[in-house]
Picture 1 (tube, rainbow, N blue to C red):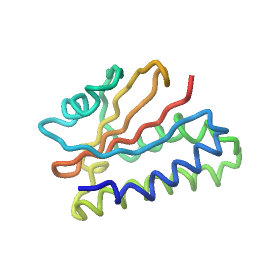
Picture 2: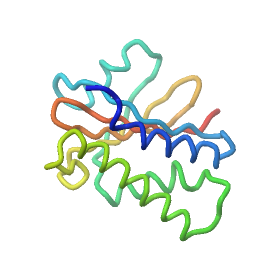
Picture 3: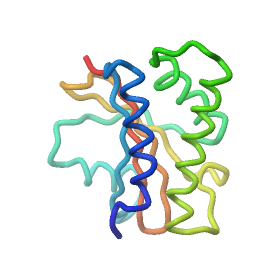
Length: 146
């Protein structure tokens, strides 16, 4: 599978990066799962110097909190209704991305999505949200540049 279902979400994240004054990086990637979500993600990142820890479940409420803490609070906009709209848009783009792969699932409702704390020299400490979709997984990276 190619990355085409993720292009819209990645484009939206590019706009939000600009609204952060390029102090943040937000991106999306997709990888093949060969076992559990976190183990497959570690394999996917094996050629990069990134340390993973602290895995937790992600549902819609947790996703909203993660977006608020790691994206919306970093933007140069303080208009609360507009920030909530940005959060809603991100969740909709995530849903569109996984429903283009498999329309009959909702990993955020089913408890299959995970948040993983990551650490690298470039970003410092940041977060990935992992959304499994059949034999694929969508990885959403939310980081501040150090």
